[in-house]
Length: 70
Image (cartoon, rainbow, N blue to C red; front, side, top):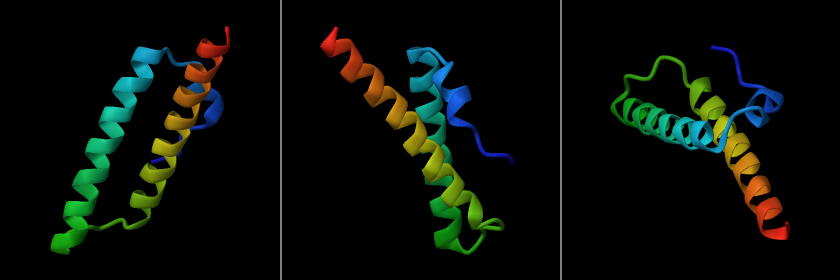
């Protein structure tokens, strides 16, 4: 699964970003559970998901800070 570019994330609406954040956190939970039980096949996916969460959080924080300045 390809990683998401920050450019694509910036084009999403706030509602889409919140939805994406929920999905990514859910996936992260499932991956951690699989890792704990020894069922995880692709350990690199954990790192990808964490980075995608960080990208979404960065865009959300940036938008919130711009909204308070305006």
